[in-house]
Length: 562
Image (cartoon, rainbow, N blue to C red; front, side):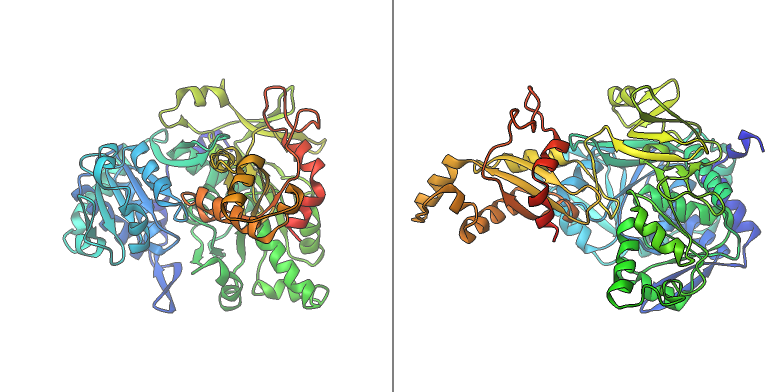
């Protein structure tokens, strides 16, 4: 097959599927406590209607539309409708704090913001008033799926339901025809914000070709049929779920069930008996631990039944999959493979597939994707999946794109059979076992801004929550203890004192009040000496040497996770 098989758009794939499979079941989602099922033709009607709503609100081709919502049916409709209107979808993670959401709305110059409910509106309300208003487009409009306050600052909030009732079907059909005629594979489709090494968000620009080619390449490598039932639960605001759950479903024409919450996934498996599922390592480890703890690990068929009994394939992404977890599943007849990619590559670069999987690797590159290893061991990739660049950041773009090759920031090897193995990371990014990408430098800067914290190191790579090594400012601590009339024999005693630990807990929470819940520090330890060049923990320019720090304080770190 030739490379031009990837020269298409998500809009073209969706419209073709909706026409070819009009009366087939397409999606199931929870509505008022029960599963609701819709056909492809019904989704297409809703997408055209919402595209007409966006155009009524003044959205033009190329305009940015932000969506702040957890997974729900409206999220999918909005994503497709924004593209049908030839606008640019900017999905913001629903878990972010108000200042983080507001910053992304301002940075992309959004014309419309779609909010799921009042909880998202409340987070934003304080940042849409007073002098902050100058940061946003003067014509910014807000639309809510569920009941919300009537306004946010000077901005009115309109109801999606009311807007939908004022559109007609003909307007939506005209927009669909125009999109099919005028949309091109290199048109910008979405901007996805991801943390840089310093914590400054960078908007990854992905075009229609990026998204469509990656979905088709993934399908070609992994396989999916119109009879498959995929259970999707990972956040659609992340590119992993968006490409590997949403767009592969559209391209293959199967059925998608949208989980109500992450906690409900295993219960849904018992009801729906899915054949395909994607997840992060933490999810698969959690199921394994449950079976082990309940003496079911080696009961024949127990693992398969945990997923409903019909699962033919599962894929792990977002973070490294431990080899022992992969072996646990595959030894018990449940196919579980690891994939590898990043937002900048739409995301899939490689994946283990049925008949072509090797534990300890991230599989082979999918069709259409080239991979090579640089002289210093960095993984480079080239192909139709590589992003256009970073939004309004030409210098940052030039750092990672060279002659069409994307520098991933990860270190790796390609074995004799063509399988890619990830061996380390060049960039300072923590990837938790839940697949969250976190910039430790940003959190450490927030912590050390407190006068009682001299140094801080955030830990959490491949773990399910963040911890921190804290070096107190001894003089500031002594002064604080004196002001509270607390007398302690030594600083070593102070670092274990419950009142002192409570004081630092309070200060850590205060310093991190403006970041998302998964960026919070769950546990910490106070170190009895500063990090130093002499101990190999800092460079001569006083930058942290993270690997050395984690080796030197390995015992203290492990205690935080016990």
